[in-house]
Image (tube, rainbow, N blue to C red):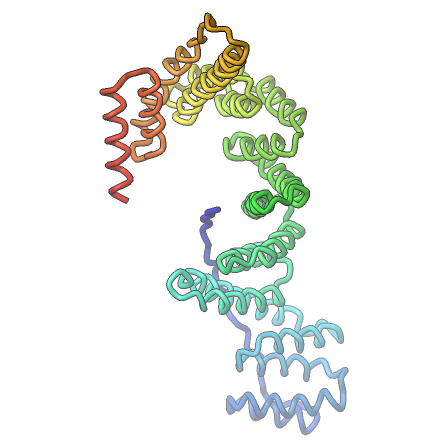
Length: 390
């Protein structure tokens, strides 16, 4: 599975630095403010820790402790002190909110930078995650922070971590379609892995989760071909063909001239081996948009698969006739007509896709089946040219 997601930097706010002028207070508070004026942040923290140990209800002490820790880049400790301060009173609520937002923005931007360096230096992913985790502590309702953390987990191949962060992002913003699509993609990949190891039960469970995620993306943007085809695919693989059929039927009824809906219908019908209906659906999509490359390609595939199905049936009948000693049985070659119908669409798709080696190889095989030797040689030569160049 390959996924590519862009990261956006956020604007950083300014950090608010509290006044440390001398006012009435304990000896520890007075000493702390003096140390803060002298930028001796560690000593200021020590004095303030003594103060809150004696009086844990001192709102100002907790706030100043947060400031001292901020200056030492101990952001988790800063946040803890701020939380204790706000639990006592709201005197510094505005400054704390401003500082939390500013530090969160800095952590986010630094984390994005680290993530972008991770391709060359994988250790940067862990550093990015540290930043994002602290950022989440400061701004726990920021769904984008969970999302970028998920990207870092994914880059480390930590699917459990990525899934957890994406679920947290969606819990805070159910309309976060990028997170939903990413989550669906991960569940889909895990389903494929489960199928590969023979665990069909786990695979179905993952596909059902993928369906939930893809439903979010489809509802948010039903005109996106990827959204509807993703959903139809998981419905098909979980044997929820009624949902897939309802999805496409309602979409086409709502917008009969929507090429994407026609295309999606063709994809579903093709998966069901309903070749006649699928070819009609793809043709309708091409009537709406003759330059619809995906519809062109899949119309060719539909005719090809139709021909393959007919050939398999013909071979089966031939075997049965041979087994019965029927020497007069005549092979049904009508499947070649479907191969011929596939050619113009696959040829057009091959030109549009250019470097699709598999498509040129497939064309070569079709030409061979139809005894079109010159074209077969050209197609295989194109296949060799592409594969040797990679």
